[in-house]
Length: 158
Image (tube, rainbow, N blue to C red; front, side, top):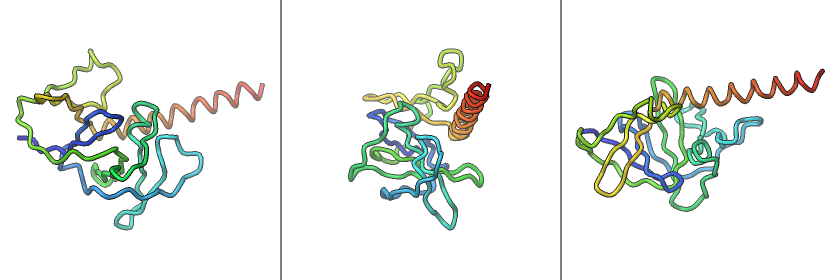
């Protein structure tokens, strides 16, 4: 059995392993950080640490999450690194049998390493996120954006 926290973002079901989830909290407006990528809404303070808030809908689908009474913040961690995800709603904490998980084949889903597996239920297919790869994706996107800006500056400076 695998215990997962299941949530909705952009009308799609996602999950994270419960052992990587610190806490679910109500929406609070994060403090804006200048010149940050659009999917990073800002930062919040959690246990005396500054934690970035990532809008998963904006990251994956380039559509911002609409702020309603149902939205939640999921605080997750890998080692010492905390991340906070804005999601539309929490479905719950669910135990899934091992045979419901299908590993994501990298040959089929190129550049989707942030997906760990598909959880096949009777009514849905839930996308299980790979938090380590998601952290790497965030870093890669920020690096890519910086590189494009530098290239643009170099081309305009000629």
